[in-house]
Length: 251
Length: 217
Image (tube, rainbow over all chains, first blue to last red):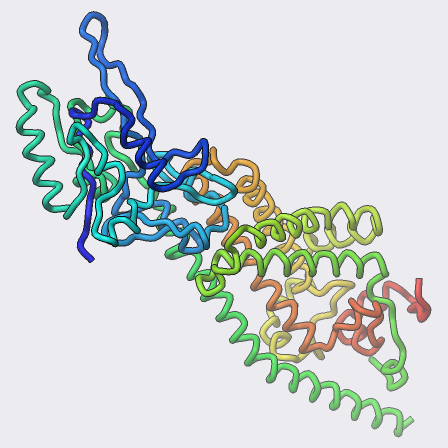
């Protein structure tokens, strides 16, 4: 499967909420649940103010921390996207703590997050948010092509936004949502260098298999030793009883 | 020195309260182990879907945490003895550790004389007490502070929880091993063991008790 990505051009977002509504409707999300949150931002200091919209959603990290910590495999990577199978979610909430972008939510005791409209995409369509965006701030397609598009868009707006940059090419091991930012990430409430602590990646990949292995080893060793040790103990008791009988006889 | 008649004679090893506490600990631990294993071992992960195993895990956790309180209520003396003796080691205990390999392989005769608990049992209990504390603390953190621990905090608590369970499970494997090798199960079912076994493995205890009781408590 090809590695896909979203293009999210913050400089073009007009905050119309069309993506939010299309996402909610298309994915039939229950009331109060949203996969995309548009947050209005006012940047700079008076009188040099500038407005914009933060598009808070799952950024589909390549090395997704939520996938690393998910014990049941409800969260998994496929085609560059971070997919969710709610049927096997146990509601442990590890993902809500592990996500560096604070994305997964708990709805009815199970994880709820953007699934990149997997059904729609599998049927040859594009995700609801992309299909409905009127300002061409959203696109979806092959990651390499999306990345090239993002770079050319940054080059085109450099004059107007000198700090413009691509975000998501390498951040957090590369994101599945490549962003065109008109300003520094911190100004747009995005972490400059999103980090996943080492322990998050070692806990289920190293610590847990080691735990299982050592427990299995202890069962194996004692299982074999039990047979030998039990026999030894029975023999020493038999010997003891023989000596006792001899001692009794000589009395 | 044991005599043939000692083989028939029984001594009370654990009072009824102690056996109830032990059973509570065993049941709650197995509940926790298997429901925990469901989210740790991928082939069993499907069983955790929906969160039922998580609820059973919490019920088990409350039972597990209630064990020390239960022990203090039903047998205060026994609880105190267990705790004090498990962290007190004498010369014979140290000598016992030197010959641990021999005991592991089923040779109890000729081991340095032991009291009510042998040095291995003491170390086992001490290990259970310490790793139970770490498993409970990390477990409470994940129960109540989840959502605000952050990625590093969650992974740290979960790693401590996993490693504590590794220690407790290996301790359990050893516990079952010695129970089998030295056919000691009756001490936790009827509470009685044969006097001969007690004299071989816990001569200082038998001596301490003077004339061993042959009737129940």
